[in-house]
Length: 340
Ligand SMILES: [Zn+2]
Image 1 (cartoon, rainbow, N blue to C red):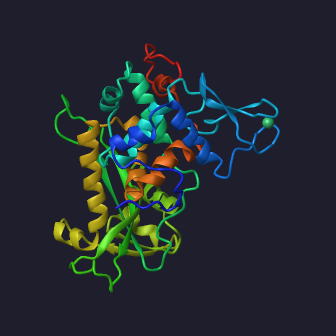
Image 2 (cartoon, helix red, strand yellow; image 1 turned 120 degrees about the vertical axis):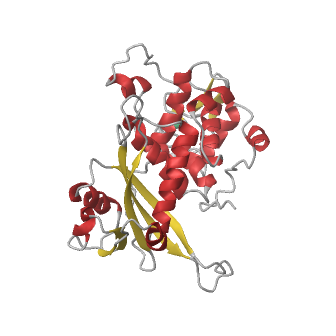
Image 3 (cartoon, rainbow, N blue to C red; image 1 turned 60 degrees about the vertical axis):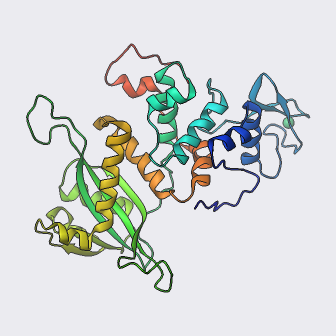
C-alpha cells in the first residue's frame, strides 16, 4: 500500500507504466508537473515577483517566461536536472523506475529501457539521482522512547580472483536500524514476532575500532537512545558516550543473534542480495553511493510518491559529481566530460 504523506492531490504518481505514459506523455507534461510542484499556489516570477500564469516556450520546455518583464525562470534550477541536456521525460522515467521498482535498476537496464545511445548518460542520470538520495538535514534515529536501535557491522563485496581466499578488497559497512513494535491492540499483532524495521542508516567505516564504530553511532543515533549490539569491544564505549547500551554475547551462536538482533541482520541480508543481484558487485569507491540508495529506498518503501518528488525536486540541494569527476582519480581520460 502506498501513502502520499504530503497529500498533493494535484501531483499524480503513476501506479503502472501505462499510467506513467498517460500522465507524462511528453516534455510539456513534465514541465507542467514541475511548475505545480514548485509553485503550488501559482507561478511567481523570480525577476519581478509578479504572480501570473507564465508563457511556455515550445523550443525550451524547461523554461517559463514572465508575461510582464519577459524574464525567464528555469523550472529545473536548484534541482538535479539543472542545466540538463537530457529531456525532462528521461529524468522522470529514471526517477519513476528508481522509486517504483522494488529492487531498483542498473545503468545497463536503464540504458536499454530508455533506448539511450550512451552508457555514460544512463550511469550519470542514475548517479545524480543517487546523490540526491541523501537529505542534508538527515536527523538522528532512535529518538522515540518506544523504539530501540540495533547496530552491527559487516563486510560487503570484494573480489578474491587470483588472490586466494579471504577478505581481499572487502569493505566494512556499519548499520543502525530503528526497531518498532506493532501496536499490541492491532490485528496485525497475531504473529509471535511483532518487531519490524523503522529507518535505517548505513555507512562505510574504516575499521572495527571504537573510534570508527562509536563515531558512526554518534553521527546517526540520537543521544540517550537504547542500542543493542553484540559484545564486540568496538561498541564498549557507547554507555560512556551517553547511550542506553545493551551488549549481547553472541558467542558464535546464530540463534542468539536471531533472538536479540534480528532486524539489523535482515537489513544486511537484504543489502547483500540487492548489491549482488542488481549491480553485480560494487567497487569500494562507489559503495557509499549505493548504500545511500539502499537507505533512501528502504526508508521510503511505503511512500513511493514522496520518493519520486524528492528525487526530482528536493534532490537539487545536493551537487552531483560529473561522470568524469567520478573517474578522474582513476585517470580514465577516455570518458567524456559532457553534461547529461
Ligand atoms: Zn517578471
